[in-house]
Length: 450
Ligand code: UD1
Ligand code: MG
Image (cartoon, rainbow, N blue to C red):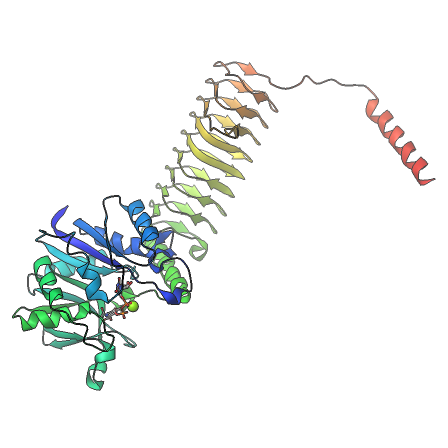
């Protein structure tokens, strides 16, 4: 952990243009709220402190923030009077903190950790560092007015002259300075400007006036992409998917149709893993080297070890551990279960709250009946057991090692190791009865017609 970095993430804005009741920073890309993407970039600096400025939908924003990191601190900005005013709300939380502060926006999800590291490194040269970019279309971004290597000031579009508007080097919003200097300058902000707001962007100019220096680190425009509308959210989501796919391919993951594979923000795929078309990764999935995820499978909060084969059409739900060389086949759902090495659950089964031992074989249509309407119960299937097709395993229940359950059994009692369990009615054959029954029914039908 770096004891000298604090992150301040601005997330108080409403985001009216999202046309949604959900606060803007909680809209998701690849299964994580926008602000979590920003926090994750900042996390690469191992900050000692993280302060989120919440305002609109503060309760929801706080809950999501705590979900991401329980140690994250929240400061409230009940009235949104500008980005400078937002940063001022972190002053109390950071009282006595003497390191550097990095300010990020919660609606700007793609700043790379390397870029933030470059900003921190540039602090040896200047007292304030602003992250800028060359804008293809500078629009209404704040403009960076430079003087050689130094940043003279930032001018907001609304306040800029025609000459200043012609500048294409724009402000991303990310800023780094020592906490002491930052809050000193924030004390001097005024709202005497075109927007009537306290601009954070006045800090570099004020620092210069106080005899300190400011500089710029330039990043790619794509990193500074901010989300304001549902269309921008969709486009950013697609961009993110493209990046994840390209990264996976260059890491040696095999994908025949990468455009059909959907990643979560935290998907981890090992080298040589093969992902067939139309696979969806929800958050929390890791797939080890040389595992094979076949088409149309959906995985969430699951780990798949080397050599395992999943799908096609499989669903791995939270808490699933698939060990080496295990197989989970079509129309199989696994939840909170451990499938040991070499075990097979090949067809049409539900395995939940369960332990499946090494090399056990679960026949088609097996169900672990884990829920009694109130409580959940565990099923344990020991190594080498063979579960006959259509077995209902009514939990809590244990099937011993190398035991066998007859197909169609309802198993309500533990089965000792190596035993055969039959839990079904005995079959009775009535010779000729089927033919007689059919004749009887045909006669009835003829009578009805006549
Ligand atoms: C800001 C910058 C501009 C820069 C642009 C980049 C200022 C004054 N301007 O403009 O130079 O080019 O970002 O996208 O900083 N927020 C709060 N509380 C507030 C106001 C804003 O938390 O009182 C948050 C918003 O939720 C948002 C971020 O700060 O996440 C930026 O605010 P926004 O209103 O979008 O600033 P811009 O006008 O885009
Ligand atoms: Mg903005």
